[in-house]
Image (cartoon, rainbow, N blue to C red; front, side):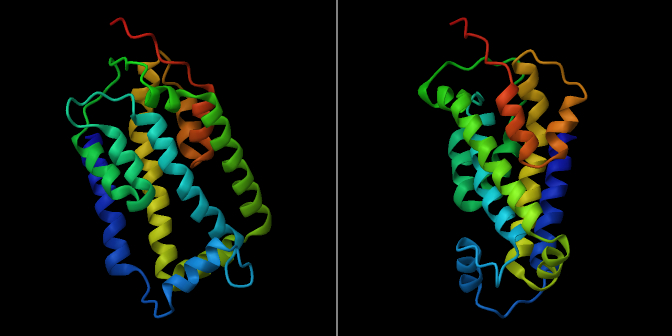
Length: 212
């Protein structure tokens, strides 16, 4: 059922992008450059916030998935590729993924990187800074107006929330792997996109030692 729900959400998201997003004849690269430069005359700060949070999501997914054991199918190429390809490659992995609650990963350098509280702190600090800036300087109304006319913002927003759904799908698995109770905090972590995820990375228990 989890995979079916993820598939439905993924299909609905991209059906919206390709069939219901606004036709936008403005140069996309000019808009992307304006977002990257944080040109507030052309781009609302909330657009800048979401755009940059999309750079945090892939690192969160790396931190959540590199401990997986799927035999020859490795999670890390899909997680890292989402930095460039968005969530599409990540969802292909999630469709094939088996639950990993009982698997204890070996402490390889990549796993140690994913487990690092320094990484978690950097992601949390970046997320907090972006949230504070976007919410204090930006406008939901301006973001909504841009959403209605700009194809890139449609794609960016769909991508943002599909990452959030992917995180929700694997969170309980990671909590059980670490012998953490799946309680009301689960919803706190998943209902506040990116910020909840980075808070979880900060407070989650370390992986148990691999007996082998």
